[in-house]
Image (cartoon, rainbow, N blue to C red; front, side, top):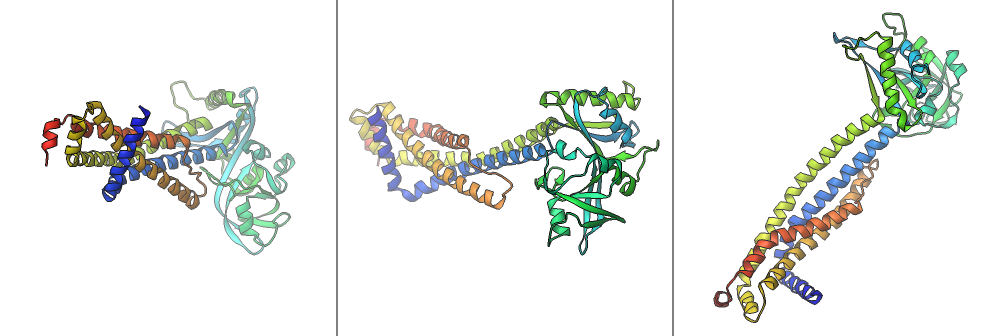
Length: 409
C-alpha cells in the first residue's frame, strides 16, 4: 500500500514537471487563497489580542460608571454625591477602591518655553493602584495633596517630552489655563488604550481640578465628575459590584422601578466580549471573502485534471488493459490533484509567513504571527480542495472503457 502511494506521488511529480507552466498557473489560485486566508486570520487574531490588551490596560477588575439620559432625553451627569454613595462600603461592599475622574481636554498648557493643548485628568490619590500604573520619575500626589487642593501635577511621558524636551520635568512648573502647577512626577509609559493615548496626560488632584479648572455644578449645586472607576475585590466580584452600584444609584436618584437608569455601567468583561464578538465576525467575513480565491483555485484544479484525463486517455486504457483496477485509476488522479493542491498550499503558507512578518514590521503594535493552527488549517484546506475537486476527473478517468481508450487519438 505504502509503495503504491509513493509511486503515485512520483508519477504525479513527473506529470507536474512535464507541464511546469500549466502547473504553476494552476497552483496560483490555491497559493493566493491559502495565503489570503492565513494572513487575514492572523491579522484578525492580532487585532483581537491588541484590543484585549487595550482593555486590560485600563486596570484589573474594573467597573466604569458614566452619566446617562433621563426619560426626557436630558443629560444627567455624575456628581460627587454619586461618588460618596458608591464609596460607602455599606452600599457597595464588594468594591475595593473608587476613583472619580474629571476629564478636561484641549486646555492651553505652557512650560518654560513650550506650549501645547493639555489633556487634563483630575483623579484621587489611589489612581495609580486602580489603573495598575507605576512612576518613572518622582512621585504621585498623596491624600493630603487631594485634601489640600495642592497645585501639583504628574505627567505622562509623551506630555513630559513635549513640554520639557531637554531635561527632567520633576520640580519644574507648568501653567494650565491660568493656574500654575509644580510637576512632581512622570508616569511609566503604557501606550494607547481605547480611551486614547495614556502617555499624553496631565494628572492633577481631583479637588484642584474641581475648584480651579472645572467649576461645573449640577442643578443641586454638587460638583460634576466625568466618570467613576470602581475596582472589584476580585474577578468573581465584578458582576456583583455592577449590580450593587446600579441598586445604589437608583435608590440615591429616586428612580422608580418602572423607569430606566439615567446612568450607564460597563465592566471590562462587557466591553471585551462586545469588541471580540464584532472582531470575530469581521475576521470570519474577511476569511470567507479570501476563501473565494480557494474556490477559484479548486475549479482550476478540476479543469486542469479534466484536460489531463483527456490527454492521457490512451495511458489510462493501457493501464486498465494490463490489469489496473478502477480504484487504482481513481487513486492515481486523486493523488495528482492533491499534490498540486498541497504544493500550492505550501507555497501559500510560505507567502503568508512573509506577509505576516511584513505586517508586523509595518504595524509594530500588532503581534501578527502565523499560528500552528493556521498551518494545520492550510494543510487541511489544501488537501481537502485537492480531493474535493479531483474526485470528478478521477471518476471520469476510471470510468473509461479500455477498448475505447486504446483507440483514442
